[in-house]
Image 1 (tube, rainbow, N blue to C red):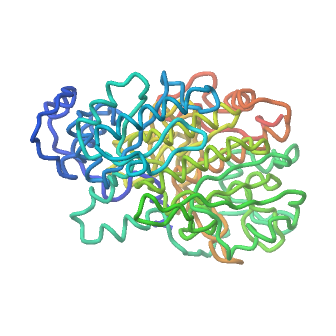
Image 2 (image 1 turned 90 degrees about the vertical axis):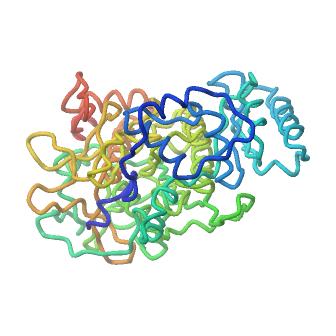
Length: 504
């Protein structure tokens, strides 16, 4: 349970930084001196940390060419170029000139790098105005930054967390399995209530009046997309028995966009199956069937589930994880049967390709819920993580069981938070019962991860009750059914949602 409560960023390895304010200010000088040696990964991380420790969100656009070049060089010389005539011009379908824009930029890079386009081009998005290229020269970056058709240039494979934890002998083991584990737990009888036909309702559901809301809506007809680590092939209730007990007439579909390879040019995904457990837990709390075998039920137990294995764990720390998330969002954005997207993963700084993917799905009417962040208590200074801080997402965090608002031991808070879910018990510190990775077994899961998936399930109940509504109407009703409405709390957003009020 302790392992499960350490879910999403920022993880165990983030350290407080010693960068001075002067070093941070130096990043505003974008000149590049020839013969400068590239920065080390430690130095690049210290610059990133200096922004976060000062309460400033980190974007690669705010660093010098020297820092950007160094990060790209460290990350296999791979860069992402987002192009378009403005910050909102990121969809290929919105203009007929995207091919010309891309070709002109590729020719510019090709000439500067003195290599053919086929030698430098690694990937181009099907739907978004972005591509990945190999860049070795800082002069190329200067040309791109000055080009009016370039929205951003970023390192595509800079593994912040790997470098941050490189001095810890246990670092790689911890990092590589962040948020993962195959444990099961014997649920305390105090943490659930058994309802027909023999399903266990988590204690936290009653704190939000979810069981009462089931008299009016159970999520039928609403598709929830879970962007995470996939689904366990061993948990039958999330596979062949998805329609069982009082859950019927719905479907579960599984896709994979994550490529398990150190080579950026690899394109073969490693499948749809969860090799972490986190994705199974999130799908469970949102959509697990109201079963007859004595296991936890999900919030929207009659909703459809579309699961994407987009990452190996919850820390979006490398090229294939970030590209996997981008592709999952665009794919879900293009589905008319998906109304809600939930992602309990993220990063401590902005990733342009993920930002574009989120906005692409948002433009197609998807209601997007993202985790506000979960980590050990000494790293909570980072605040709300990316992409939960984006205005196109709904940010969620977790709180303790109490009459007053107290964030959970590992949860992040901040002004970007929209809703809170009670997910940590006052006495035992137990979290929320969910299905285990293994069949016929249960587990506990905590943090802003479970809070996010729970909120996505509540949204599905509201949308099922009002199938003709837009996402704005659904979100407004959820806000109106929350404790702080119409005033938004500076740390906990609109507060605890009353699901029954939301569906009435």
